[in-house]
Amino acid sequence: MKTIIKHIANIRTGVFAKPVDKGDIVYLQAKYFDEAGVLKTELEPDLNAGSISSKHLLEQGDVLFAAKGSKNFAATFNHNGIPTVASTSFFVIRVHQQQVLPAFLTWFLNTPGTQQLLKRYAKGSSIVSISKDDLSELEISIPSIEKQHLILKTANLRKLELSINNQISDLKEQYIQALLKSALKK
Image 1: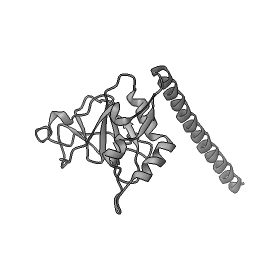
Image 2: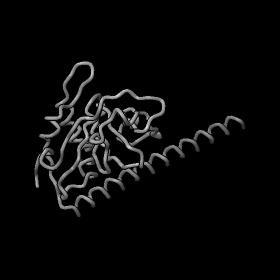
Image 3: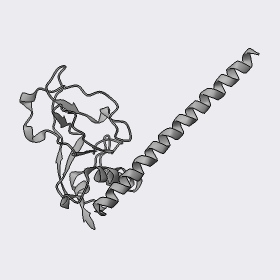
């Protein structure tokens, strides 16, 4: 089935807030993620709860889409037990159709073809951004839940394969450098 994102999900912007040293809520920012949308840091609460409406709190499975800047990744929010809100760098996409897995939507938004298309929509001179309207009108093909699970499993295995290949390459390089270094000593 083909549809557009606004027919399967609600999209809202993140909140603008000023972080504090010690807070009650995590303020999720794009800088906490790598290029692939993977968290690269431990999150600490850095907002006061009194300044945030509960309607902005992220829920398990919310899809975060980094709409501002050059890295327009998507990530699925996995609740860590600490109340969390997204910054204005993100659109928060909450899937409301049971036939769509949030992780599948995340995968779709991160595919090279979708990323290229979204880059064409980006506007702005100093900091480019993708509009909520452009994102909500994006067409997506939705296979059965079983196929979505299979696609996600295959994509995760491919990521694992690439990671293992990188580790092998690094170990080979270390080995060769050690051999070369020992050859100098002889």
